[in-house]
Amino acid sequence: MQEARNNPDVGVDPIDLRTLTRGQLVDTLKELGQPAFRAKQIEEWVWEKGATSFDDMTNLPKALRATLSSRFTLGGVQQAARQVSEDGSRKYLLRYADGTAVECVGMPSGNKLAVCVSSQAGCAMGCAFCATGAAGLTRSLTAAEIYDQVMHVRDDFDTRVTSVVLMGQGEPFMNYDASLAAMRKLNSPDGLGIGARHITVSTCGVIPAIKRFANEPEQFTLAVSLHSAVQRTRNALMPGVRKYSLMHLYEVMGEYVDKTGRRPTYEYALIRGVNDTEDELGALCDFCRDNLAHVNIIQLNEVKGSRFQPSSDARAGEFVRRLASVGVEATIRQSRGQDIDAACGQLKQRMR
Image 1 (cartoon, helix red, strand yellow):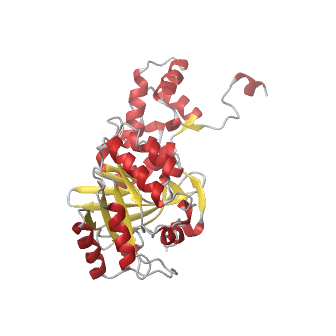
Image 2 (spheres, one colour; image 1 turned 180 degrees about the vertical axis):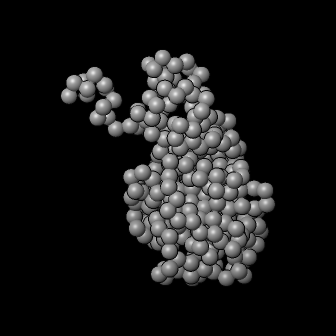
Image 3 (tube, helix red, strand yellow; image 1 turned 120 degrees about the vertical axis):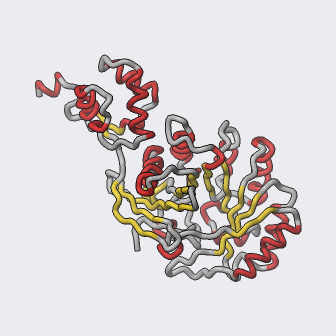
């Protein structure tokens, strides 16, 4: 008991050092009698080099490393499984210290590497065609846990990450602060230094968060999962955003474009007999006409046990042509990693 009274760290669980702001880290070091420049050294080890142990920080005094080890952890993930696709993509099942698991994907293309990360373990939005939502939400991830996924993929490929998309498990705008903090650290020269326009956040259409996002100063890219411009169809496919009407979404996206000058992307997964009809195509053209927008046509990726089936190549091509006829730029997005269930809508919290 006397030892506990004399040592304030006894009986206190270490916290993740990566949750500290620069100011908090400087204050901590000051309490330890260390100069402020040590904060920069530590952050370089954590955010740029991906150190997982204080012992790795060889330019710090040995005594300081020991003290930091007694007070803090450095988080990190363990790779539970890894699969490699025929197209070169790699899917990872990563596990955090509390046992929570998420999936992320690395997608190489020439000398570029894109990483698709999860913002939550599971998802509460319940989209009918998505494997992630079937199991519900476990918890939201911290900014550092989102960042960890990118670092893990970078290290596995041993190459620089050139773009990141928050399009994995979860709804990033239901974990807004952590998602934004992760994006800022990925963009920061003190992090991975990825250009803001090469960092994309995808939302089902959480309108209050879209309004908030429009006021952020960075040039991050916004993608909205639309999947239908017919209210009844969208309600059935995406019950998690049923309370946000398409009319309201249309108005808010117009405000977003006016305020930011940035072109958003609408994601549209073509589902045979559901959202690929003539009425659905006409509604999509009306929704996007006269707006600064790009439409990504995605042929639905099959999910085991799902009643939904993808549309034909010909139908996808017709959507692109019709949208172009009303002045809307559209492309067919080539899904990566389908053979390992790593494509859009296929991520779960366990490998098959």
